[in-house]
Length: 225
Image (cartoon, rainbow, N blue to C red; front, side):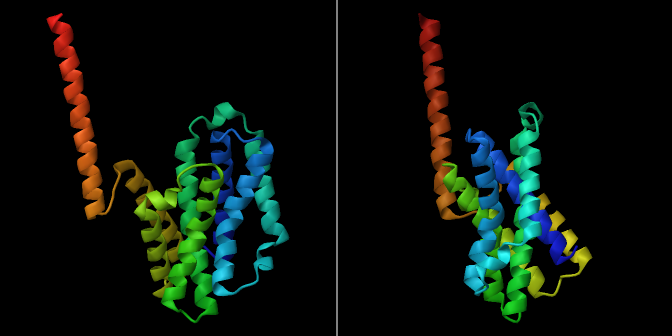
């Protein structure tokens, strides 16, 4: 898997997630295209600003055409075929996260001679930047700010490139691992054992207990009557 392959996998995947979110937000087809392009190019725009590369380098004809064709295909698909868009949305979002984070790390490594700090920043903002813009415009809480796994996986992508794991086989394996871990974290609701999460879990448990107690009390009263 080369840089070009990562690039096109990333933009296609993120363009698709932008379209799916636009569908959920009841946007018009113009909104679908707008959100698709913003998601596909937002992370790269932030990355280029951070590492000092002209933003105009993002506007390659082949890249824009790829995003445009992807969105046309999605817009023309009957809605009944994408009823389960959430599942596919998370899948494509995970692929975009992995490929964009690797892209960012590889580009920063080339520009800043394998500077780990810059590579981590580039991987982080390339991986989550477009998704955050997408969610904010759609009026949703950004997934990247709700799930620690986003940041952790982008950092791991940067570390992998820093360690020299940039062969086609290694890049493919990293993408597969990132997608598998991200989807598993969502399914099993993995979270870091931080004190703030402990308080949140206690609150949830207290709420659940209160609901159960109130339900039981109502049931007892109805039985008495």
